[in-house]
Length: 585
Image 1 (tube, rainbow, N blue to C red):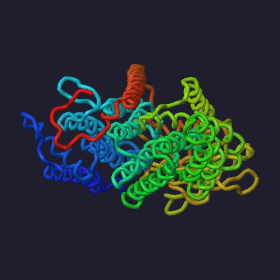
Image 2: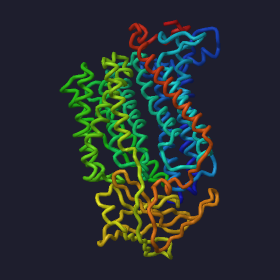
Image 3: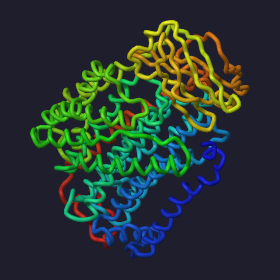
């Protein structure tokens, strides 16, 4: 496991390889394409790439460039994102800002902005009849939200560095700046669907249209699922109830949206594409690079539920579709993920989660399905046909579903720790005699957890009678490792320190490994040991940027959807490859 942190040089091909391939593909397209007409040399030469793409695919070249770059972006950013979070869990603080995972994230997010810029340039030089004129440039409507989401995600990176400098390094995904990075990148794929619609790309009927729609479907669900990263990597800091809720939110928004855009089978196509892409990411992060393997939900049961709901309710009555799909995902879909968590979940869902999870996931499923209807209609350039009040109700349902699992409390609990040392004292089996054994009854998880020593180790605390619990295997208690016992039941998320090394950089004293009586403290006091109080200015600026970025991006998304939907049919027809100067739509 330590090799992943030591052999950083071996990881550079992950960045260089894809970028070299992209450069070679761009050069090949430039060579294949024909110069366009017009007096300006740069415009004539720039037209080579979209003309080559149009020759290859039979589809508008400006749109194919946007979608190609937009689909290439997750290759870097999502792999970089998962390896970066895994890095912090396995090794702790970065020694430099420009690590391999960080560069992959920045390059992937930058490609979103590059794709929007390329769309404007190529639409201009090929005379695409869509969008609007802005000076000399022809701007397709779908480039507005794409550029907005890309800018929000890209700006999130320097803000994230500032946030950590102000408040310390954390091991949590759900910091405000992380949500800006993930949200901006995730929602950018909706703009790519809109690009396809604006360019008049059919949903089927040929290899390229079908392949692009299928790739977009899988990439969209991959993006939406990145919010589950903490659970995927085995270091969640919130209630387990959050896990089925955020899986359901991704399923409702993505699968229902795909069903609206792609028609029959669209939800299943998205789920299968997701499994293939996330399986590849798991292989890259785990066996190839030595990081924690990021596990993932299956979505197949939810996809089948959406398909059955659409077959029964139809897609014309969008409210009825949202209710039927939500009901199917909150029952059949939830059952499928429950089964899958037992096979491959890092924290399998237990029976004690069942009473509460049904109601909360029902709220999340119906709310997300309604948003999926809206997103699918917007992406497909079709009328939403869902009242504004219903949409507002869907957002409210989602907020309530997210609020219910939010409380986190400590525990008035202590225990006697006994270590059975092995391997010259580097490993130990942990035994805890709880002063209140009933506190562990029906626990969502009760485990010894070790991290930041070159890997991550989970060992369930197994009952040994009379309030005694023993780790199922030895865990590290020496070197750079940090080891605690974690207990989660209901709102309680508490940790008992077993071994924590001294950390002079943050002024934290060592907690030596040894036998004795110790108290549980709030879980985050141990997991976020590097956190510190900082100036309120950082929070004010970050939250202001997030609010402004979210509002402007969603407004531009709604504007582009309305304009594309209301555009004359001729604007969505493929212009001839020899089109000259741009025409105002």
